[in-house]
Structure formats: structure tokens, C-alpha cells
Amino acid sequence: MESIKTLLLDDEYLALNLLENYVRQVEQLVVVGKYKSPVQALDVLRTGEVDLLFLDIQMPGLSGLQLLSTLQRPPVTIFTTAYSEHALTAFNLNAVDYLLKPFSFERFLQAVNKARTLLLPPAVKVDAYQAHKDFFSIKADGKLIKVAFDDILYIEGLKEYVRIVCRDGRHVTLESLKNLEESILPAEFFLRVHKSYIVAKDKVQSVEGNVLHIGAHKIPISRERRDEVVAAVFMI
Image: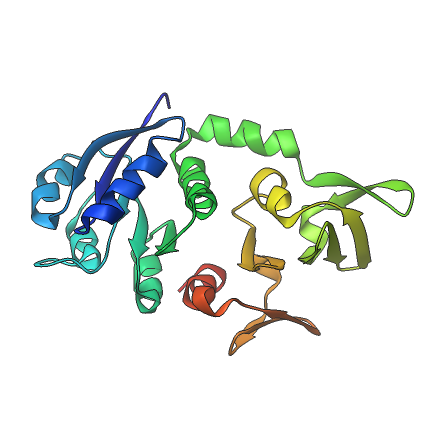
């Protein structure tokens, strides 16, 4: 895909301008419209020619959730809102991400990367998967070690190091959670749940309060991302 046709919808002028500034810094994203009114955006959205939608929730007349539910062919959607309590509903509408205002450019890029994964042609996705195969390599204990993605339970950030906890042991290596999240770990299988933790989504067995359980391991969830994390991990 040469470009990703992007529509911005937010009734707050400053939020809309900030979002447009973020979008224009990302290669491939092309703004095809920005609106403060859901009703004004409906005609464009119903053409099916919008690839990616950034959508506020609390708007006069028609909420973002109501708007998205009316579309027969909705674009890939990223919600941008100040309200965390709508995350479950948003993910039930197949939103790719849920950004809580105020969000950083780094967090915005994480959401865009998820959208890109969905918008890439299938052949490109297969090539990308084969490029990283099913493992990555780290240096630990004076050795070069293969770490299979499927063996990872979770990863903990330790300042300039990370602890990779696997089924059969753990490795500590010089690496950052940010680089692992953005460049190495497949986004469809792994999720940042806390500033210091990434989990393998299919290894999570239960959630209790703000804690995920993976076997005997207890992984904290950031309070502000709890609904988003639960929705992504448990597919609800």
C-alpha cells in the first residue's frame, strides 16, 4: 500500500490539530479529512475509501462508538479519548487500539504500527513473518542464545537490561523493552501491559484486579490501561 488514507474526527480543536501534527510525521499516512462533527464525517466514511480512522468518543449528537456501529464497512479504527471506561466496548467494535488522552507521540506510533499490520497486503505480512521467523537472538552469560517467541511467558524491564522469562528458564540481557516491543516481538502475540512488563497474550491464564496470572507468575497491569489490556488479552 503506497499510502494509508487517514481521517481524523474529534470535536476538540486543539486535540484535532495535535493529532494531525502526529499523523503528518508518519510516512504513509495521508490525511484525507478532519472533522469536528460526526455527522459531517459520515458521508466520507460510508464511501469505504478511508483506510484508517482516528475517532474520539464523547462528541455532541453522535458518540464515536455509535458512529462506528453504524458503518457497514468500517475502516481500521483507533479511538482517542479521555475516558478509559469505554475500552471494552471499543474493542468489541474491533478497534485496533485505544489511546487515552493525553497520549505521547511514542504511544501514537505504537497504535499506528498495529494498524499498519492490518492494512498491509497478505503477501507482505507473510514475508515479514518469515523475516523474523519464530525466534530472535540475544547475548547472555557470554553466549549467543536463540529465544523462541512461543517459549516466552513475559519480559520484565530492568533499566538498561531486560529479564526474559521462558517456560524452561530465564535470560537477562542488555536490551530495552521499547526496542523489543517496536522492532522484535510480533505485535499480534505480545502486549505491553505496564511500563516494566510485556506479556505473551496466549500465556495469560487469568486476571485478578490489576494483576495478570501466568502460572505462578503475577504480572502487574497499569491502572490506566487495565480495560484495554483485559480486552486485548481475553478477546472481549
